[in-house]
Image (tube, rainbow, N blue to C red; front, side, top):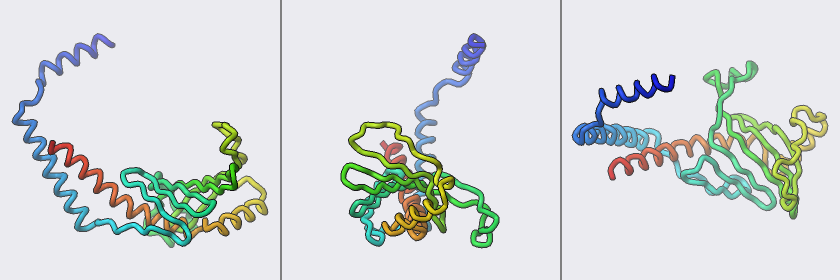
Amino acid sequence: MARLLLRSVKTLTLTHPPSSRRSYLAFNDNLLRILSTEITYFSDYHHPLTPPPTFRSFDIEDRPGEPWVRLRRDGVRIDATMFDGVAPVPEEKRRVYEGETRLHVSFVVEVTKGDEVLEFVCSAWPESMQVERVFPMRRSAGITRPYMGRKFKYLPEDLQKVMLDYLEEGGVDDELAMFLHQYMANKDKSEILRWMKKIESFVKK
């Protein structure tokens, strides 16, 4: 099999020689033309808004060129990804959505007291948030893979409720989930424009 593959590679190499300088330049020109068209289209019709610097009591630290954002207030830090998945819309919520799928944002909440941290691993849906796991940790402990406890939905209901109330007091609730979706939709526009402009700059060199 290996010899057959090598023979095929040699044949392909002989049959299709490297592109000439002229065809390479034509390819570059075509790529630049398409990039310019797309950049103009996104700039005119999908132009991102200036992102807000705060949300309620949180300061927002955007990460241009990176697929995440950080929100921070005294003792609480939230790291949220851009859209990282889709899921079918539950049957009971299909009247609210136009399509049959909804986008997902992952975020981690760290509540800090001295050297100790209570970490909440969460999901943000367009209309609500969902806690996946909760686990305590100590920064100085040096444990790389701490025990993360049971999945949140398997905890006793009264414990789930009090933890959700605890998060809500800290500003982590359904309204935050809705804000993250709006923020990430706008960030997605910024990042795709930045990405295309970087490729355009590279090709022009």
